[in-house]
Length: 231
Image 1 (tube, one colour):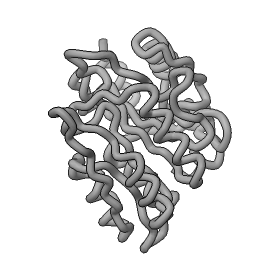
Image 2: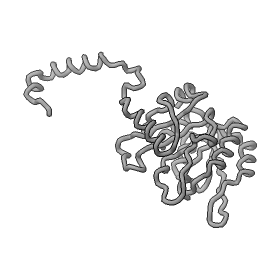
Image 3: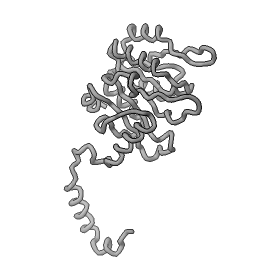
Image 4: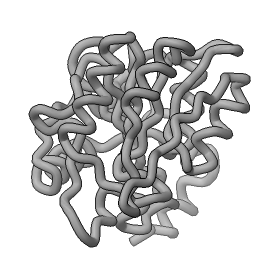
């Protein structure tokens, strides 16, 4: 409970002095200054329990939101005139994030086969070789189609990105919205290579927590420090 009588006794100057003392005692360079340790552990536990993904504390970065992080990522790794790749149909903010940074969007259309979207890997590789995109924004599960990618499909996408030195940015914010089928986390063994991967996810969609701004990125292993500094 708030002790209003004590606050009145302290007065404005007293409250200001106490606030200064509290701030002086904080290490604002500590990566956990703005984020409780319990948050990171909750992310680690959730990813392990829900998606069988083994992640480390230092891989996690709290972000303001997944869409804003797309903007940061494009700003960090692209210059005006560069290209990024994405599958269409696409969630509009993917393309808007690129266009607002004056980055070209290379659309790789999904192919409908027996009323089910498939990746056209031949065209995908051709586009990567021709346009040399800096990033591949890959939505898993796919939004808006709802397509759940298999481990083999994720692995093949990742291998193409490795081969041509494209950073794979995977948006997994809809992972908890699976009604039929099994979601495959990109960090599962045998899926995406860790050395050129940025994974974006959030509890916001699953638990209606958008107002808390608790989205986060997972940047594992090789290149983590430089990626985190730039993003």
